[in-house]
Image (cartoon, rainbow, N blue to C red; front, side):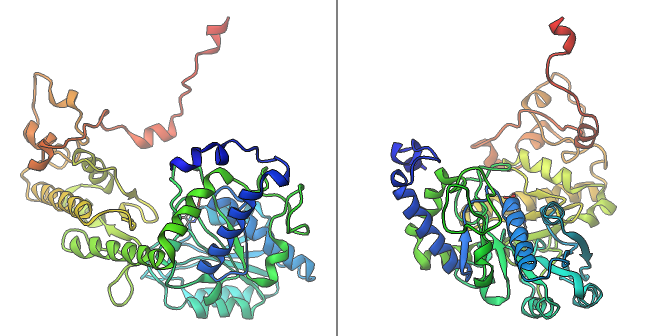
Length: 437
Ligand SMILES: *Cc1c(COP(=O)(O)O)cnc(C)c1O
């Protein structure tokens, strides 16, 4: 991270004259070349500042292509129900009409339904948006047939590349049938990931769509493209050196190894926890892709415990909870990535197994369903150190459910909040208007 603070990278203005930006131009070119190699696409723009902006840009590219080829009436965008919420939002913003297609019981795109919708909308089909591997954490084996089906109806295939960390070096969307993809350099290519940024969501396309990639008023290669997607010609350029360094230092072999380790880690967690929390979706051989969705729904019946309770209890064990209730309500979706060590994965697995034992104490009636360490989690120091203690479990169980936590303990600063109440009752934290009177 330090090099991006060097003045040579950090102190240049995005609109500095071109002859002062030669270093950035070279970095942009090299990074685009590498990302094209990784994705199998012919052209790429680094302008979009988020995956969602890459989607928007990519759909505008498809639209511009269709219009230029006398197919401007094609405005239907097919999206499977498993899609990330940004997919339909982007299609809507790009002026397309979203038609949702079904998923089967295994979480895969329902090919029969997709075929029916392709036939129904054949004359007006603009594209399909799929995610590969899917948001259900599975490699769908029919992806090539799916792409061919949509192509046979004159539509283009948008492959959401947010899960490219399960593909780099192993498979390329530009080779298995995709026409357009976005990448999330803040997911797959090492840029730190905050909520909504600082991100880079490059849009990559096959050869016949290259002329429509985003352009910029200051010039550049794609003068006939869909126009600027972000204000600056090179987008969020100041963080691009991170992805550049990551690719350069990892090399092709290293990037492939990262993919393999990410997939291995997800499968390791899924396998180690299968007796406690079954994985909801897997391929026929029982394997997952880069993430696994643990099904906690049956616990509601046996113990009253919800995925949210497990998420909150994990804080007492020193973990930030994995993705909660997305894409399936009352599940936990775990994506360990390639970055966590085996020791850290094991620490997480031990916590999850210990929590399953706590749930068993509720199931067998030892603790009431509404008064147990899960329902009261997370435990703050203040909640544990009061004079009175009237819970059916000890303070020690609340704070140190594993002995190892006595060595290293994270203390949650605040107890349980009612998320739903908070979402439904917005309150303004600014000073009231009367204050200014
Ligand atoms: C994260 C994600 C996106 C959106 O990317 P942002 O950079 O957050 O806008 C789109 N699709 C999928 C599958 C994602 O996981």
